[in-house]
Image (tube, rainbow, N blue to C red; front, side):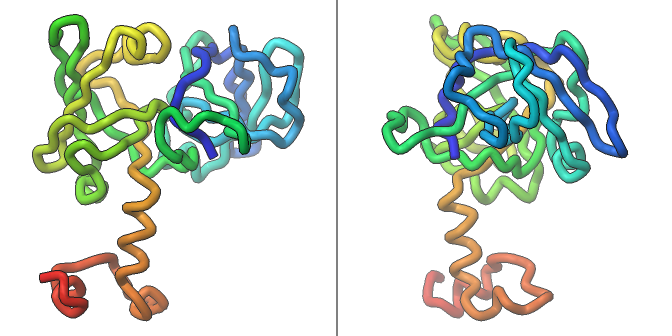
Length: 218
């Protein structure tokens, strides 16, 4: 688990195809690794990756076909910058929100403009994720915990303060940039719980208006 508070921006040193998936070597920059062991998790652009080697200045991680299909990790190449966060501990300050490192989909930057000293970004999420994105709710973008300022359909707005611009990849984003999105963990579980016993049916498609009415929510 993670908090969505980026601890460092690292750099991809190598991206090696391996048996149909991908192996990445990440230079971690200012992120200390003295307390990291083989098998530990490090969120890389919001994706929970397992450390398989520790060469001293960073780590190696394997990226499965599942991760390549549902994230932007397959676009990484030597020289690509990545947001990094080590897994939280029982004594970690939860400065952001609870983040699993399991990406729900890939979004896209559709606009950005100055707003005093901040920058206002507008992003488009996949249609299937729109129902989980709420005004003043939390969302994770490339591993960064953020508050949603406005929602319109599948598009949402974020206000990025100068500190976040400096310490994350947001300064590199342009219109058309694709980003990893993780919606609020509680929203995902709430939808599943409200299906009740129907969740065990192979055809259970998700929460519908009919299901809400049956449980007295409409």
